[in-house]
Length: 426
Image (tube, helix red, strand yellow):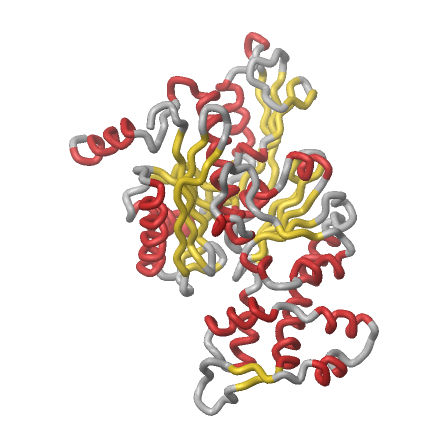
């Protein structure tokens, strides 16, 4: 495979599914998906944290196996998304005097280290992300400070607080398949990196990654990330309500939510101040046959009842998103609108409801920046892990440029041999 570019892998531990991607970027900058795989989480992951180590390991192994079989590539390291209730993402500043008045890679390293000193916690460590770094030389912003001339290098570095518990369990799961972690990526940032264009980032846009147990929000203005956070509410709440109200399994509830989506007539009636759903009940008195309910529960349900359940929880979820944006005074600072990603984005009319409630143009986000994207990957739920893959190539380029001879291709044959000898002979 020499001369064809580097191969990288990425994994997204979602509450609904674990997804793995393997890709290659050619020397001319074209990125191609080589293989992909997914496996249902079945409650072994919640809000980015592993709940059942054995089940998570089996699901990851299954997704990885499918991706490797398709890619026909050996994988030794992988980029991993992180998200959780205890994670915090903030910007810290680090500066350093420039010896000889020329910025070298070691100056960037020192600036990152200085910034990280402000981010201390005994039960967590700071994880930075090269795609969220901002640099200035003598207070003049530059996109790439290497070889710039000046007296002081200043970096604004976004760090995510990675808890020891979260890291140790993710690391154990990945190392169980013989893989090293190349880097961690904050999932809300990865989602943005997976679907936003350069124009989106420059003009101003928000990415709302609507997962099963959490919602990640990342906001760009003037090319900079001004917000990146995760919240403990997601589309799984809609499924839970349907499963409870209709007394069906989570799997059947998921199918019902996806098949029927959100009835926007209920939003219109609610806005008019009418009793929600009175006219809809007469219009939508259509029985829906349920495949399997608990003993004693009805085997059919009126469509208007299902519509009520889906709408009420979806409306609440959208209120939470709009409330957060409003509290941050960002609701009306998004000329390129809101981009909805994650599995929840596939619910019919979810984007329209968010548009109606927020007053901001809303669209479904799908992966960008790839050549010949396979059809199953061209979907909003794959956006976070494709963003991790995009980040992986950016990270490796920065690492290679910043450390020169110290850089190594983690998935090369030589690296594989090095690991073999280190494991068995050192």
